[in-house]
Amino acid sequence: ARFTKYEKHAGGARVLQMLEDVIADSQNTETEALNSEYNAQGAYEEFMKDSNEAITAYTENIVNMQGAKATAEEEHIAAKDDLKATMRHLEELHDTLGGLKSSCNYLLDNFSVRQEARTAEIDALGEAKAILSGAK
Image (cartoon, rainbow, N blue to C red; front, side):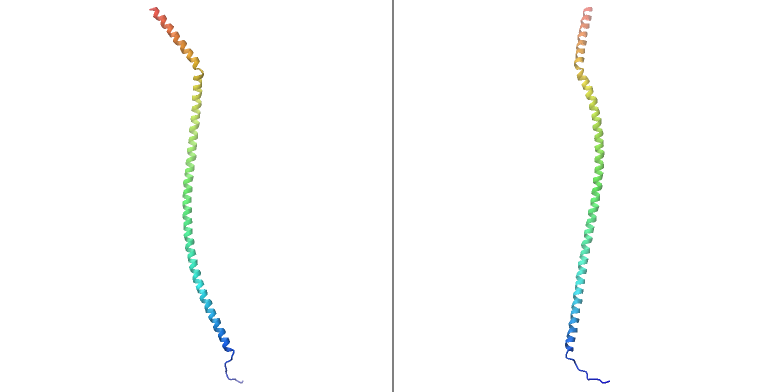
């Protein structure tokens, strides 16, 4: 085997420069990736914080709305009961009105007949008194 003397190749400097450039690019890429990951982690944490606050707010709104709904349902039931009671009362008043109306109509229709009967009765009492006065 024959060995030759080791010498630097002229193209070796370009290869070394290219390797140094690749190493520098990979370090820059790694630094950018780490910075991006750090920024993404911060953005994720902020997003989660905002999301949790929004969920809490929406949950409170749901609870408040459920309370308002329950109150409205109670008021609705009370209003329906009041309406039923009012309708019963109006029916009773209508029945009373019908009875009073027929009674008043009877009195009005028979007023002149009753007035004539009373006048005749007064006249008869006057005659009876005159007869009894003359009998003494």
